[in-house]
Length: 147
Image 1 (cartoon, rainbow, N blue to C red):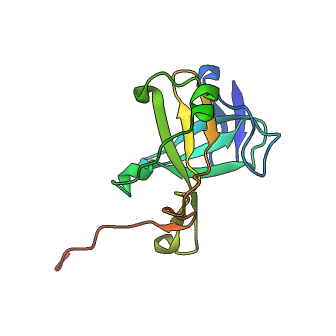
Image 2: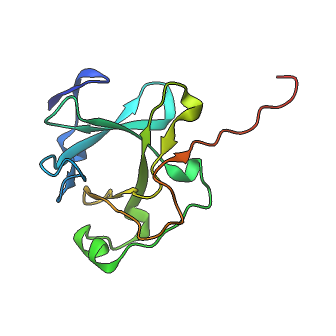
């Protein structure tokens, strides 16, 4: 299937990789079908691209690569609606807000994207806790002296 992406142009995707957001995304309730696209030569960041709207795309990342102690629990309703039967089937991503300088960019730890990769079902899950910020800084390792 061919789709258009504002980041990557005209690309071919595998229809089996289309992720269903049954309720859409907050602010984009009508957009229910997305695909995760690889960014060439970048393992840390991906693009969550609407398959219908080329201009609706989010840069996402695995929050555990930046915040190793990040943790939350899903409620029973979300587990049922995403048909989760095993933790191994679940992938978690966070949406990034890119700023003029990358060091000022943030990730949304308050509302992670939870995906049942086996069933291709997803939801942006808003945490009912103030433990995490919707604008968490992207932490980069300190540079070593002399580099």
